Amino acid sequence: MTLMDLRPETTQVPGTGPLVDIVIPVYNEASALADSVSTLRGYLCNHFPFTWRITIADNASTDTTWVIASTLALTLDGVRAIHLDKKGRGRALRTAWTDNDASIVAYMDVDLSTGLDALLPLIAPLVSGHSDVAIGSRLVPGSLVARGPRREFISRTYNAILRTVFGNGFKDAQCGFKAIRRDVADRLLPLVRDNEWFFDTELLLLAERNGLRVHEVPVTWIDDPDSRVEVAKTARDDLKGVARLANDFVRGRGTTDLGPATRPGLSAGVGAISIVAGFRRVRNWVCRPAR
Image 1 (spheres, rainbow, N blue to C red):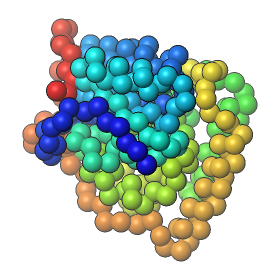
Image 2: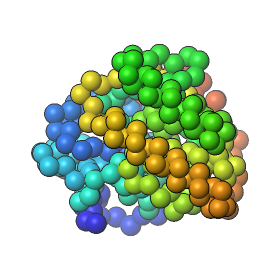
Image 3: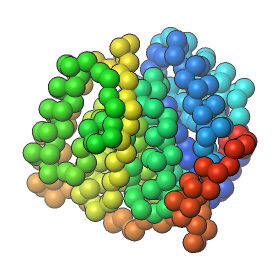
């Protein structure tokens, strides 16, 4: 696998990176990428109180996606780009999250189907130490979802199958809006075998199997009719993943030694709730990308 990375050539020192690295995995998204990164970056500059970085992870695109991604990384503070020579959303996230200097690693879909107002509620429980993993959910009270009946049926059926097979506590495995403490990701990712669309589900089920706390955040979701996801193929692959992971669990695989949550990047006694409350009283935030 070839990896091209446009990060400045500096030595990574633990604790010196941004608090949050938001990964956007892309495949042939030349038409949407620049506008989406601009929208996300503008939101982070004006509404997000923690230091951040945006990582564009190009999954072997065959259009001009990589050209656009590399240009954005060279011209915008707080944006980097990596290029993989093999497709796979899970592979892209694994690559971008591994050896990362951020305290929290996250991802969202390039179409920004999830409303960005859910970003701070997603990150805050990880900052405070309340949770180890946080996920956006379209299937919990408070969520607002606009999508076609076919996708709604497939999503609800798939998540019902998961609860029947695994008895998991989370409601929505597939929402493209997730975050995890990096120290937890470092120990959990080696257990995740899938590199495609089942990656999310496997990560969450392994997290619960290892006693980690998964926090669900209701989101506003507007489905993208131009999504690159092949729904039928993805559904079949996901069901194969369910069967494989169930067999792994029966055989006792999928456990690791994971310690209790810490409060990444914050001094003792400073809670996320107080930070968020204070942030809401501040009117003129400056852009805070990682340098």
